Image 1 (cartoon, rainbow, N blue to C red):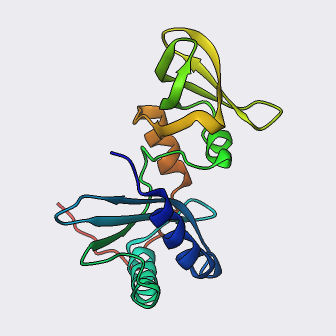
Image 2: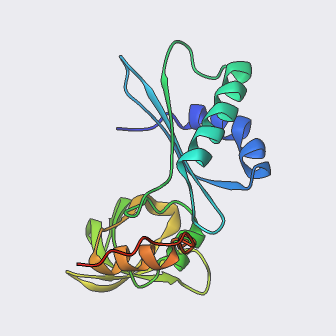
Length: 182
C-alpha cells in the first residue's frame, strides 16, 4: 500500500522538532487504512532504547501537536511504538548499525533483475549512497539507497542475543533474602 508522502512529510515536519528535543529520533511514520486509519510513529532514543513510559510520553506530546496542526482530516488512531527487534531500516545509519545481521530489502526498480533481496547487511559503500548486501541467492549486491522501498531486519537468534546484551540490566536486588532450610 502506498503511503501519502505529502501527509507523512507534513506530519514529520510538525512533530520532529519536539520529538528530537525530548531526546528521541524518529524511525518511521506510516499512515494506513481508510475506514479506521492508523498513524504509526516509531521512535527510539539514540542508544536504541524505548520504554513503555517513553511511548506514553511521546504519544501525549505528538497527539497535542497534531491536534494543533491538524494534518489529518477525520478520525484516526495514533500508535507510538519502538521499532522492535525485527525493526524497519529507514535511515542510512541503520544499515551501518546493523551490519552483519540478516535483512529483507525491497527496491522500487529491479537491481540485477530482482526487486526483493534477503541477505546479510554489509553496511554502506564508501560513497554512502549504496547498501552492501550479501544476498542468499545471488551473492554480493550493491543497492542504491535512493531505490529502497522497504528494508527490515529478520528475526534471528543472533539478533535476539545482541538485543538482550544491549538492554540495561536491572539493579541487583539488595533486600535480605529469607533463608529456608529443608
